[in-house]
Structures are given as C-alpha cells and as structure tokens.
Length: 238
Image (cartoon, rainbow, N blue to C red):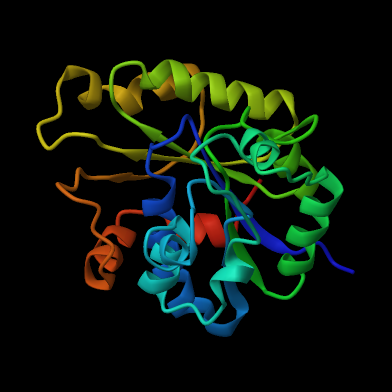
C-alpha cells in the first residue's frame, strides 16, 4: 500500500493559530481536491458534551468552514472532557489509549483519501499516549510538518526550538506560517521572519495578518489562502 499524502500541522505552542490555518488550508484544498481531501484532528481536549463537539470544537470549526462531508466523530476520533494534555485528560476519565490504537486509527483514515490535513494538539512535546508525544506521531505517520508560529516576543525562540527538534527527529519540514498577533506590529513582529531565516533556512510559506476575531467564514478564509504558498504544500520538493 502506498504511503498516503498529507501534511501534519503542528505549532510552537498551544493557541498559536493551528486551527485557523487548518481552516484556511481546508477551504482552499477542498475546492482543489474535492472528494480526495480530508481533515483530521486525532485528539482534542475540552469537549465536555455533544454540544461542545458540534459547536465549539476545532474539528467542528474546520468542518463547517470547508463544508466537509465527514462526521465529527471521524474527524475527532478521540475526545476528552477536560482542557488538558490528551494523556492526562484521558487518564482523568479512566481511559487508556495506546499509541498503537491512535496510530492505526489515523493511518486508516489517511489511506482513504488523496490528501489529508492532520492537526496536532499543542506543540511537539505534548503527551498523547503513555510514552508517546506529538513528535512521535508525526514521525510514525511519515508526514511532513507545517509549523505555525506567532510573531510575538519570544516567538523566535519557540520557532527555532521547534524546527531544531523536527530536524533532530528527521521529520521533513514543509515550512512555517507566521500568525501575527496584533494589527499594529512592533519591532519584534516586523523583524520576525528575517531573524528566523538568519538562523534557519526554513521556507516561509505565508504570513497571516491579525484578525480582531477568529474569522472562519469562507470568504475571509479564501482571501487568507491567497497569502499562503499552497502549491508548495501540495507538491513539496523535500
């Protein structure tokens, strides 16, 4: 069986804009690939009930934005009530999810589609299963990683650390997308991309301007997609 194509969206931290970027890419790729495209958020915490799943989950926001036909249960196969690292959240509700179960579930999904966006939880070192981190999942799936970073003070450190760790793990890096946190960028934000490139020749595939509110309407997302090098993500050269 051929290795499925896709992209793993990770971040330098939690709350850096992974879901926003996932929604932007999902809207654009759904139009290009149609039935061959899918989106997957293998684990999501902070979903207390079905109402949260349908209205507040990251998976629901991306599904609605891109008009994805897949059920939320298939988009988010493992869900936890408390907003904690998946391993801890699972333990606190008396669940044991092995890394083999997680990996097999994700692989089964990937093999059904031409191209899948997989959105991680937090950053690379977030515990998912006993003895198993986000970085382990990316490595086992053999997918390239797209790193979402924010250009606030401290972001360069987090971005370079993340890129360094990915390279140590021999995970192909698709590039980074910079999410701007303010409408009035200061010196740190204005020089963010240049400083990152001074120390790591990573591909900068786009910069997302600051949004006053998380805008997930299709028109806005398609406009933002024009700021991202989609061709490099679909047809990588690494």
